[in-house]
Amino acid sequence: MASLTCPRCAAELREIDSAERVTLDFCAGCKGLFFDPGEVAYYFELARDVPDLEQSRATARATDMKCPKCAGPFEELCYSALDSLVVDRCTGCGGVWLDQGEVPRLEALSAKLESPGSRMLRSMQQIRARGYLPL
Ligand SMILES: [Zn+2]
Ligand SMILES: [Zn+2]
Image (cartoon, helix red, strand yellow):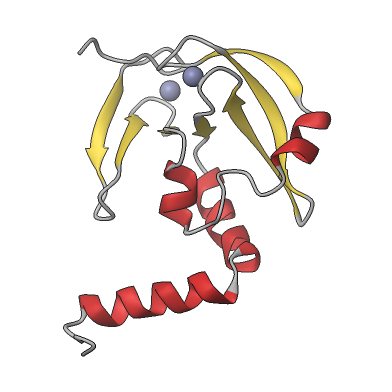
């Protein structure tokens, strides 16, 4: 497969395997990360990549960034009404680009967004990882 180009700084993206069974495309130049559709939800344990996509897209702004996967244009959208975090999302494939510093912000935000159910799920995953096996 041809290497992917960073939509932000045009450096080559590298694949990194996270411990969470998601392969992320990481830019060593600007430290941004590309998430394929569904990977933001998976990685941050959310129901959807963008919680209120229709609402976020209503105020989205077009950007010059091109998607490394499908070459579609990115748009800049407010991730959630709960926070001022703005992320870039591909209008073609729905992939999401997070700049350096946006990952920890989304991590903090996801703690507010996730449902009690997924928090439970995460706790279970953590204790299973420490060797606990439910019957
Ligand atoms: Zn870059
Ligand atoms: Zn795309």
